[in-house]
Length: 255
Image (cartoon, rainbow, N blue to C red; front, top):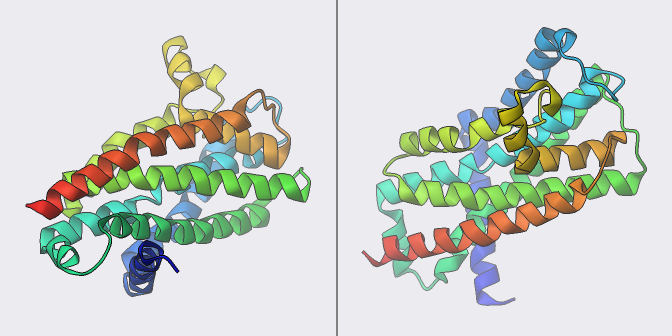
């Protein structure tokens, strides 16, 4: 096995082993998204019209999952900020380890936690009445797009974690940077219900495109170019965020 791959797996394992020992992070991956689903369905669901969908649950669940998958990168941001704060970056630097393995391992660990989050939300959706209206290959393709999109955003949060001075700052900056994008999208309401200016933003928002792709793949919603658009956006986000995060990490490790 190549050295960089084995180093990456060691870092990923380190982060996954720590997760069960951090109840607050585990709750963020499991309980918090379930609360979002229940609140939106049973508090706002009766007031939101979703033309083209049989019920709000089928409209909502893909949006909640995409939002939660993107925010799964918070674990990377908080972990890196904590390591920077405690001086662990200097310790990693002293080890015979590829520098890129640290970031790659952390972001790869997010893939596992995102799979857990998807499973929890799908089970929750099925319990409250969500129904897949798609062949198995479409469902699997949807999971693949979710993991790709989540992995791209893990690098965004890795960059945030390396830029700030503490886990608390990483949480605040990440929330401010990403949370508005989830609401100015088709995740929770149809884009057509927004003011025209926000519609323009929402139409090109990667969250909108990815959510629309998921609705097409899982419940037969209109597709357009959403599926390919979601893939392209994921690679664009990764291509921008990953080099910036690696560059920032190298600068931090060289100080």
